[in-house]
Image (tube, rainbow, N blue to C red):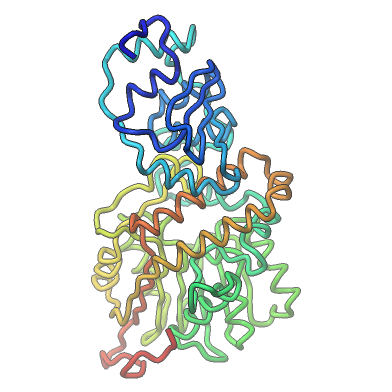
Amino acid sequence: MSSTTRETRTIADLVDEVVAGPLPVRITAYDGSKTGPDSAQRTLHIANHRAVSYLATAPGDLGMARAYTTGDLVVEGVHPGNPYDVLVDLERLHFRRPDPRLVLDLARVLGPRGLTPPPPPPQEALPRWRRVTEGLRHSFTRDREAIQHHYDVSNRFYEHVLGPTMTYTCAVFPDRESDLDDAQDNKYRLVFDKLGLKPGDRLLDIGCGWGGMVRYAARRGVHALGVTLSREQAAWAQEAIEREGLTQLASVRHDDYRNITESGFDAISSIGITEHIGVRNYPAYFRWMLDHVKEGGLVLNHCITRPDNRPRSTGAFIDRYIFPDGELTGSGRIITTMQDTGFEVLHEENLREHYALTLAGWGENLVDHWSECVDEVGEGTAKVWGLYLAGSRRGFERNVVQLHQVLATRPDESRLPRVPLRQWWAS
């Protein structure tokens, strides 16, 4: 490097300047330069100027996601639907503060456009500060837009990735060798049993997705109502209800849960929706649930959490590509809010490892059906999903995120829970 003039510095030279320590992968670039170990199992190829611009103008996961999605950053040695191994490699990548003159060197490399950020890929949502046109954060309108951004991709695409259960929440694995579909069915069984449901009861499932919990309960004689902000989910779920002959017991509405006028439910399930509610809205959310479940009734909240109780956004990549406006905090914050609202919390458990296994299963499905998924949504969107599933799996494995189920009851005047003295469901 010392013998290299600033005017002739290569892409590899610039990479070496910002990386501290050995590179965990091989890096090659469009100018013919390369760096990193020849023995590396995986290679990142910087294919053009735009890749450099994406990486330089949005450092971190957002810039890398942009370049990867557009094909400007090519990962060799992994399937495009499952970049899990290279994400593990990159955990050993450490950066150092570069020389201030690096900006001038980048400008020379990038030419007339300099460090002007290129337009982001079409899969990317607007930044939060520009979403004000869709209403205040977690308003009816903006929540609907956020949900539709992620869930109204293509029901056929989700069928390929999720499998026949069409269940997009953490499964519960009896053991590590269990089949994903069996584990999803086991999750519904666990929720059903925790809620103590029996034939003739009334269940409300908030954020019901494609109606998996609704149909599971209806098959067992429960009157189940589901609600989702995704039009595509609601249509698919209603068709499935009709196919199974469950219309006398089950229904799914395309609506906001806040518009539900019925009350006095025997139980309410909230499976994978609290992440979209917003931490500041937890009191209102759980108060709404308290008002709509009968005295002595049970509620179960199942959602992604943080290992601590500080509310934080989901990160740039997740916010812009997967869950716009999503927020996470710890199970302690959720339990405290439920207690302050008036619920008595009966039980909670962390299913973090189960979600890592679930995401691995979805990743395998994506790889197995890669050509069909690309035909359905395009290669860019399919690659976003591969990156998202692999990165999320790694997050659960490393305890960056967790998954908690919290079971609670609305006390009646006796203040005695209408449940057995000890845990009544099989784990």
